[in-house]
Length: 121
Image (tube, rainbow, N blue to C red):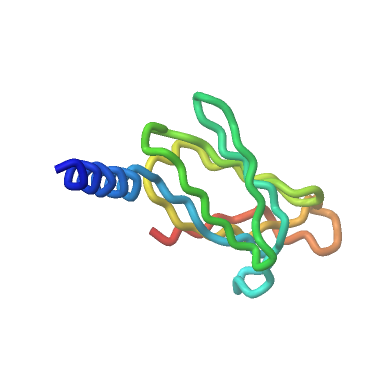
């Protein structure tokens, strides 16, 4: 009987953990064809409780898992020399890519406009 109770509690714990997370994933790129990834971009997850910092991998990808107790959060994406992107009001599983543009003025050579967000779902 003890083994059965222990097994059931472990199963319930695993099911609760698998459904108790919100996933935010995507990639950071420097071109509109999404072929030139930018690595080591800082991602700052801000909630009511506090903030946590993540970084993209060598392929410009990120995957952030949060507890479901967080109802809404924002994500700030920044790197020195690039235009910072802030996403507010994220409250569900989200997948997106960001086309990160360099911080240049309109009159600078190589100016391509502001950063863009491409939502996948």
